Image (cartoon, rainbow over all chains, first blue to last red; front, side, top):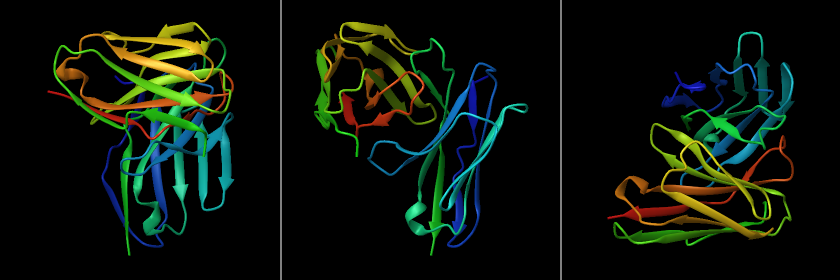
Length: 113
Length: 112
């Protein structure tokens, strides 16, 4: 079993839809959580970073973390064609882990006009 | 954008040849990381560095070595490249151990 599981999709939605992207994890040591967006032939770009359970909002994006069920989500409101990309969740354990991250395998999202 | 430059951006080489990839940063960040990205596997950590001359192995380090003689440069070396090392390689940097990592745009390496 992978430490971080993410549905690879692909996920296809119409413009304006609400998108829900999800990851589950098994390692209780994970303390902080990130979402990255990756366009084709580019490096991952940080979207959201959170240290605690609950919701964090940034514009059209909301990250949700539930440490008790080891479940993290990213919601995209009013999705746009420019949101079409691969979305990666990443978890870190903090402490003496030197910032090492464990990534999900990514979900491919297409938003069509 | 974080000041991270990876070179070369593309490389094709033959099995058994040595290959060195370079990551250069202008942010003066302490931590640097090398990942590979393959279909179905996501990003996997190869090696990381937590300071000049301080490096350690990641999840998939076999066949790879690294060096960091200056804060700004982190080199990844494939001593004798194999076809299984065909991949996209990403470098990332971080200001602190629990802080977000920022990525370069990758090196596409093909080993024939």
